[in-house]
Length: 91
Image (cartoon, rainbow, N blue to C red; front, side, top):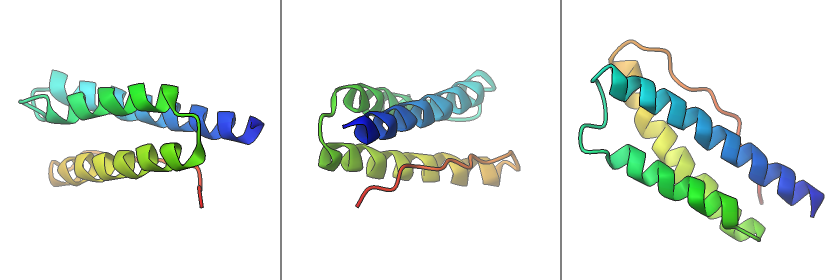
């Protein structure tokens, strides 16, 4: 159970990292005009904080990776530094 708690905490920290990057982009007026990324991110953070099993955590991580990829694609088009997040490996 210790390992699960650690993996969940890493996931939360990663989501918070994405949130900081997203906030910076929004503050610069260059991304997420309709709050689509932000709303999805808040939902994932809420889910990550309450999951109790690895399958639930894996689902959050999968969705978070998709969100990260979308933000990275946008950042790379704008010649901004992209995210390089290392996620827990869950089988």
